[in-house]
Image (cartoon, rainbow, N blue to C red; front, top):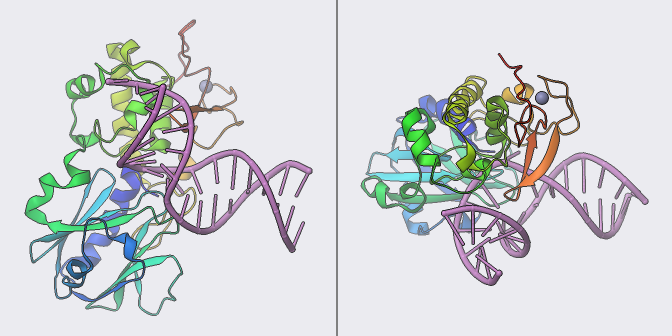
Length: 282
DNA sequence: AATACCGCCTGTACGC
DNA sequence: TGCGTACAGGCGGTAT
Ligand SMILES: [Zn+2]
């Protein structure tokens, strides 16, 4: 499911209901869910209370009152949600945490890419996936943005997908950001001028905050912490729209592999070589 | 430093 | 209905 807007939506939907709840029982239904974490550590969480829920990049962090943090990565199909204990257990439910309430927290993941790590909250800065993350998009200034990106030789889209440069952008939003900025996904980063960097920067801020406002994008399996679908899929301009018309110019949207991932773009609005600059977007 | 490709694992859509 | 193929919100590893 998860790019920054989806994970943030899960965080916001879970936090008010899970805060101050106590873990009463742990039911791990697929042992490989644990990454660099012993089963006893998970079982030892019984009796701990949730203090807060945070997000860093695409990971969700649950701080507990005994100084530990649970880190979930949802990868492609992970879902983390609160539900009634009466709800039938799905074959893809990998973990169930029973709480001191009628609700329980479940982690469901058909593809088994997602994982859970538990570590002391104080050790967070040293922990694997977190220590290598770049800054959050909403905390980056234009000057920082330019210095983070420039100096790299590769194509712009794969760079936007790198979590160690900026944390949280995935395949859907990279395409939407570049479309809004009118930059071809294969454009060499070194060829972007300041105005173009600025457009990518502003588009990143705008697209991500808009996607959060619409509670994320449900293409397939994404649900928020209460099982609700997102709304942003209806507002996608290029992602998943190969063969359809560009909303701005009517040109047919194309798909091409860039950095091993499908990239959707408008070949007219996002020209690789700027022969005749198209100005159409307001 | 960057790219290409494979693997992880499962479900779904689609062509025949 | 069945079968094969392509593809999927991510990311780590390896060889080039
Ligand atoms: Zn266009």
